[in-house]
Image (cartoon, rainbow, N blue to C red; front, side):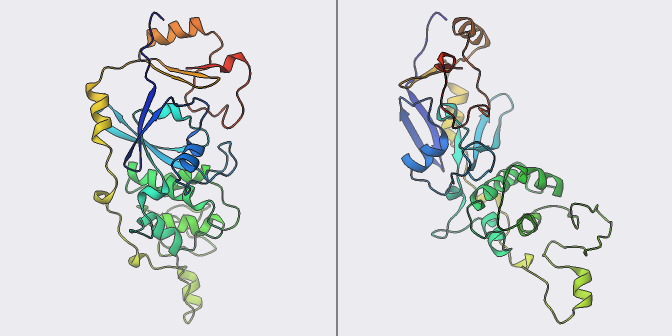
Length: 292
């Protein structure tokens, strides 16, 4: 590579606020940066290896070719800070709080008794929130797939799924059932009631919550994608970004030709996309001193 255009400043947004980080360290992951530097402690540290989903946040990026904003749910413990240039990060604090107003996703998991110790709740909420940003009326199958990366040890998944299923267009009585097929345990409706159980016990209330009392989902109240980041993608010429830490250098080439040239120069440098092979593990050997 003949020349590097050094960009020592990392620019991204967290919950609508601009973050400018000078000399970002390639070894720093998003999770410790949120908790220690920005004091956004709603995102929890669980396993540290992308297995529990307690640190789930939403990352949004503007796709210039498609002229649309893309939303992704990611594990903050696996996401290198240097990967966030030009991105918008949304944490559980950014969608709502008791000091202002809670988001419908937060309200429903609480009122449907889907939170016990609460440690996994922020990750559950952000996974569901990301799904709704991409699809305001998801199917039950999409809901189950979304929550597949989030673990809960104490509450059990039924109240969590029942809470979030109120956002779905159609429901099934259980994982073994299919639409229109009766379940031996009784068909569970969106409001959490069992029709067969109610027929047997007329004097006993079997409803855990009332769906009619929930706040409606209103996408006009969501955080907008920062226009500044859209202008960055639209107007500014793509350039190679280089971030240097004490031990590791991060290079983000702007063109395929540059990438091929860098790979020929740094033969052992790994290509990072999801970073699932590293996570919180320490960098090992010379092959980890340069990351692409």
